[in-house]
Image 1 (cartoon, helix red, strand yellow):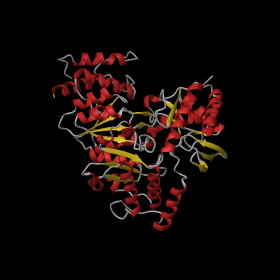
Image 2 (cartoon, one colour):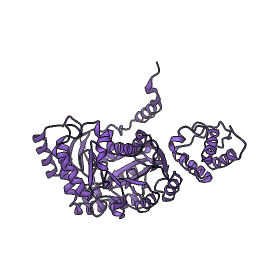
Image 3 (cartoon, rainbow over the protein chains, first blue to last red):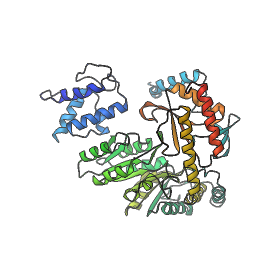
Image 4 (cartoon, helix red, strand yellow):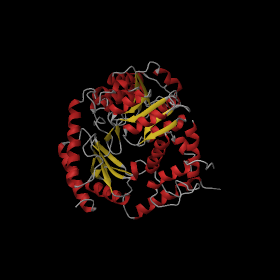
Length: 81
Length: 400
């Protein structure tokens, strides 16, 4: 994983308001199993990521993203376009 | 060998736990006799029906029944074929003519169910590189249509115009875009701000599809739905509807003014690769659709019923899905599945049937008692319904 920029830190900051269980966030933290987010939480969180980086993360892409690290990678990739 | 059904173990367990408590299974009710659009016999007891989609009460209309009998005798019990082969009879054309007239649109295509209409039209319009922008609370048939077409799915927060606009603006400008909305959302019974949403979609160069399944027949001046009521029906590219609600039988359809619409009959798989509706069904549908064109009095009475039930339930202390009645659906929000099932059973014992709705059909994990009114519910019946809610609500501790 590329950690040469602040993308991971920005993603982590956006997770916090939704991190009701206070889970420690690492690149391997899984949204479904570790954070236990329901579909409405995912929708609101994805919207905040999209607004922060001015990108679009389709449901098709979301299905491929399981961990915080994978999300940060996807955000970097999408921001380049 | 791995058991492919083991993925449902948690649901099986949840169901067993619920039924062990002795509650009647809310998803296994049998109607022994049906007396009218509003009354059936369940477990030997006369039961008022408040959980059907029979909004306009057309199921026992004498003209509708007569048309069905005549077609059954003259054309037989089924077509045994696809619409594009041997399955198009004069009756199928006649009901498409009735729909074109009802909506004042150039084209109408009839499917075997409403589910197939969404599945077929959405999957055929939006392919792999196209984007479908949809409300997160969209019906399962809409999501399934997106999945079948392999389109890029972009959901936005329920009824949020700004969220829709933001997402549309982030889609590559050259990409094909379909915005999918519903007139009335069937779980909470709330209406979409179509006027604003259609304007935003058009400004972004998207095509618009509106599912008006739960509004046909009684919302809008001619009963064409929420898009008509909000004055944007001319900007909607495709309207999806069903015969299984206000029309009172089964089947689905899409109406449109698009000049190339007719080609869809050859390329839409859920239209081509299934048997067409039986002649008696299309005959009842055509008769019913034509009668709905003149249903102003019934519409007015249905609205009266909706307002009275909404106001009465609110006064009793129930929490409802909307602050004001917006459609013929009134959702009573239950604190959890157990209380919902207990209340559902208590109502049934009083002689009232409503729908118990639970996730994943409901938004935000809610358990709902969904009430849908009929134009044939009498003023007295609405009074009876309120008394039953009061008794069942107190018996289960839902209200004081």
